[in-house]
Amino acid sequence: MAVQPPPGDRRIVIENVAIATVDANDTEYARGHVVILGNTIEAVGEGPAPARPDGVVRRIDGEGHLVTPGLVNTHHHFYQWITRGLAQDDILFDWLVALYPTWARIDERLVHAAAQGSAAALLKSGCTTASDHHYVFPKDGGDVLGASIEAVRELGLRFTALRGSMDRSRKDGGLPPDHAVEELDDILAASEAAVDRYHDPSFGSMLHVALAPCSPFSVSTDLLRQSAELARRKGVRLHTHGSETVEEERFCRKLFGMGPTDYFESVGWLGADVWMAHCVHMDDSDIAKFAETGTGVAHCPSSNARLGAGIARVPDMLRAGVPVGLGVDGGASNESGELGTELRNALLINRVHRSPTALTGRQALRLGTMGGARVLGRQDEIGSIEAGKLADLALWKIDGVMHSSIADPVAALTLGALPPLAALFVNGEAVVEQGRLTTVDEERIARDCARAARELTGRAGRAG
Image (cartoon, rainbow, N blue to C red; front, side):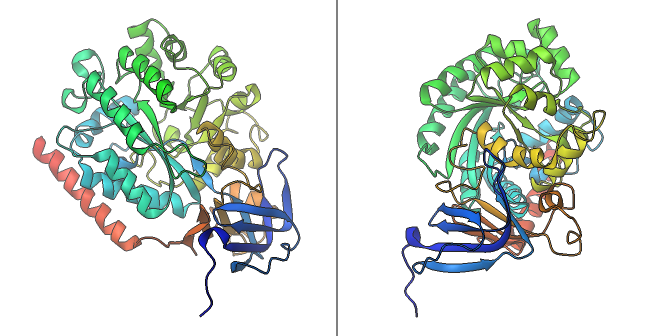
């Protein structure tokens, strides 16, 4: 039997393949090659791969396929995977009020199942890096953050775990029930502990941690301000929901006397280390402030449509220089759980009421790759196919009946149905092959998620 080279010396060669690099020049190759060495990209270019006699453990003939950077998901709530299909016709505030009592009864075992379901859906749709905004920490729920981190590790997804929080309950004028929030001091202590325990800032890290108080209507001003101070002291990023609905705008003006963007600015929450989910209802001044400060946006087109929240001004944001990535959002407001389909949805939704050139297919692909990498602060590691970057790659099959007659390979991905995923590499390891997860048993995940959903619904029903 042949002796395998050490992992860092192993090469995977993909040839005869269409390539969209999403580099600074949007370089594309009609028939090119990508060479993976260990966990990084060694070479990319036109034509056959350079001759490399040593260490090649796999050669892939990419005829009829497109290679893109792995997709980057900038906003999600993994725990919601086991509360899908509920509150189907509600706007955001009513949807939250309906679901908070159920979410407040999760525990680490249920979160583990839900996180595996969410991560599986992401991987199978071409996503290689994801952030998960977890903000519900029941007192008797165990280590729910640790459960989600372990669940994702088993699947091989590159991960940003967002230690979320809520401390403004109904008695304080917020939306969450009183038993669903934490005390300020407990939140800050747990947030610092999460960073110390889990955050790995090294190049190629599989796990980052960021701090993420939930939203203006569920957290106090003190929590926002002190979380920003803590995050900057620890050198991690900040995330929250912002300007998602007109109801949020009214809430902020009534409670704080200003709109969401001005409120966030007043508590130190604009900056290149901050990104916010949704940002649907922003005026020119808001967009200018985001551009001036480098504050990022997670655009979630399917969730915004599902909840009737509106359409974010993404073309205007991009023209102004705002960093914008794509987000799935939680499974309870985007039951598909796929990031790949968000490319097409972002493209189509942003053309509504504007023009057919408001957003191009290549801009949509950039949102889902390099845009997301920039939002997460990882643009030097992921988001494009360039030598020296991490080997996070998606290989899409575009020669089947659904795609073979589409003239442009990128259009096959961004305008056609989501192509079959022939392979997905994270850190140089194949985590999906021919549409199937390689690291875990998909059927077991499906059973676990169905069982967890029934159990959580039962708990909520017994609690009244």
